[in-house]
Length: 500
Image (cartoon, rainbow, N blue to C red; front, side, top):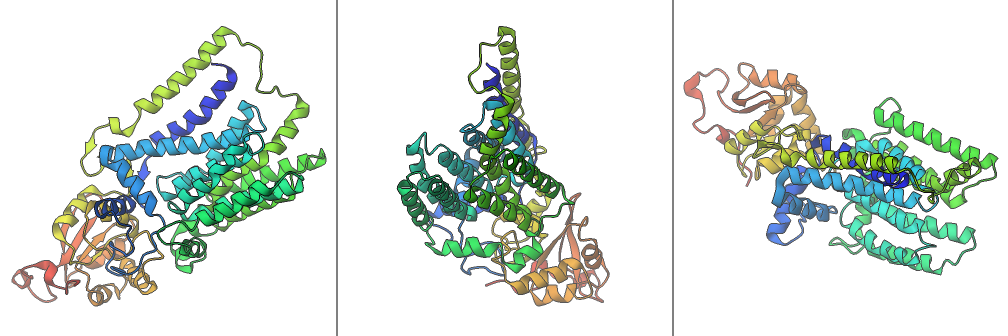
C-alpha cells in the first residue's frame, strides 16, 4: 500500500464513510420509492399524478422515472438500510470519478485532495435522490472526456451515459454541454475534432430517448426558472454567502480565481472554452444552492491542468516513486483497513430499528407514528393537509391518502399553494379555507405550525384531536360549534365531501 494508493483509497473511503454516518432525508426520496413501486407493479411509466388531491390524475412529466425505479428496486431487498448503502456507493463513486479525471494531469495526492475539496463544497447536495444519480453521471462524463486523447474509446460511452441521465434527472443537459466544451478545447488546440463533433450529436439525440421525448428539455430548462419553485423551495433560491453551503461555494470560487490568476502570471492560461465552462458552473452555483453540486464536481476537473502546471515548477514528484519503507506501507494499509471496516461496520442496515422507519437514527422527516395513524384514519377518498416537508414520507408510509402539496412544486397548481399557505399559516382564514377545499384530515407539526395547531384545538373550530405524539398531531372534523359530545359526527371523515 504505497502513499499514492493510500491517497486514492482516501478519496473513496472518506466520502463513503461520511455518507454512511449521515442521516437520510425522505423529502425527495420517499415519494420516489413509492412511484418506483407503482411503476414496477404496473410495468408502465407514471404519466399522471397519483399523490395529491389538488393535481390527481393531471399530466405529470415524470422525467425522473428511472430514478424511482432504481430506488424502489434497491429498497425491495434491504429497505431503508439498503438505500443508505446505495447512497454511500454513489457518493464514493462520484468523488472517485472526479479523482480519476484529475489524475489525467495530477499525481494521486493532488488529485485526491482536489476531489475531496469538491466533495466538501458539494456535500449538502449529496442526499439520496434523483440528483445524486445525475452527479455520478456528470462525473463519469467528465472522466471520459478528460482521458479522450489517451483513451479515445472511452468517449463513446458519453452518449450512453447521457441517455441514462436523461431518464434519471433534469440536469442531463450538462452532458452535451461538457462535450461541447471538450470540442471547443480540441478546436482551439488544433486537435482533430470530427469524433467529438459526432459524439456531441449523438449525445443530443440521446437526451430525447425517453418516454417523454424532447419535452424533457422543457422540464429541465423550466424547473429552474419556475417562479413557484424558486419562491417556495429554499435550495432553488439564490445562493447566500451567509449559509454554510454558500460560504463554501464562494470561498471555492475565490480559490479558483486565485489559481487562474497565478497560472496567468506564469503564462499558464486555461483555454477560452475551459474558462467559459468554469464561469457557467459558477453561475449555476450562484443561481441556486441546488446548482452548487455541479460547480463542486465540475470545477476540480477543469482546474486540474492549471494546478498541474503550477505544481510542476515546485518539483512535486509524479505518480512514479521510489520504493517506500515497508513499515510505511504497513501503516498505510492499516489506515485503509480501518476506514474500510468503519464503512462496513457502520452501515445502518446493521442497526436495529422499526419496520416502518428502518434502522434507528437513519431517517429524517419521517414521523412514523403519525404515518401509521394517518393510514388508519384516512383513505383514497379523503383529502389530507400535511406539512410539505413530510408529504413525500406520507406518500410512502400512508399510501393511497391524497395530500394537498408535496415535493413536486411544479406539479401542484399555484392556487393550491396559496390555499396551503393560508392553512398552515393558521390565520383567521385557515378554517374557512379547510372547509372550502373539503379537507378531511390535517397533520400538524407544532414546531413549525404552532398557530395552526392552536387554532384547530380552539373551542368552536369544528375539529378534534384524533392522534398526537412527540412529532405532531392529527386533527379530524369533530364537534360543531355550539354542540356537545352528542353532536359529534358518527364518522368524522364524513364531515366533508369525499374525492370522487
